[in-house]
Length: 266
Image (cartoon, rainbow, N blue to C red; front, side, top):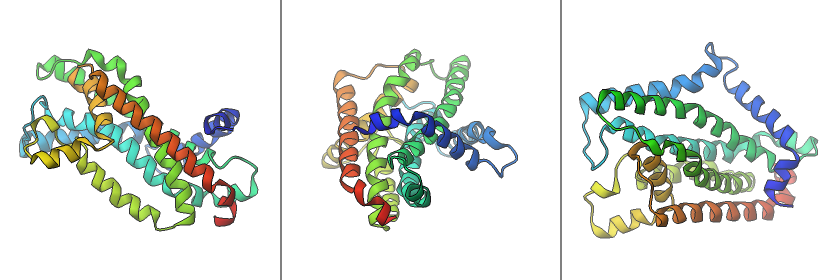
């Protein structure tokens, strides 16, 4: 039985656990779930001040830079947050996994979906900011914004595959979370999030390495449709979906390999 089939069969339980995860995250805070909107808003405000009045990075097609940066950070925060939490999701839910007869795939899925909810709540902040920028005349509104669900799909597939693999490997090798944190830092700077590959002045060999980064195409298609207002070329689309499908396939295979020994290892 495939991972997707298992999750669909237990979709009610998945929904309940996602709601529990979201409630637990903000249970002790005064503003509660409102932080899901306030966090990206405050982040955008800080970037606007810092990169308008203190630093002024210059890349082709990256003006205004705060919105350029924010449009690259949003999918990255979804990916990195889900992967980091995913490295502990089976360990944290070990007692529940041992006592309740439910597929272990549910817990990585809950982690991914809860972070996806936070991401979707942050998207309107970017949309309003882009509209305000267009009204102010500093940047044209990206009418390709409607393509966001398509641009987000490779991110979901890639995140799902990586979380599946990381979550199950972490059960057997507890050092995995530390390794994941360092790898995420490496991929953050190797991905065109804070810069544009078009305007990056680096040696040719390094540029080729950066272009081979599997996350590069995912960042490009997301930013193109929500910031640049352009439709990515077919090669970029195919590369992004290839990365997503291969990541999902690989993660599902790794999870299946370690699945039978999960309860004992937890």
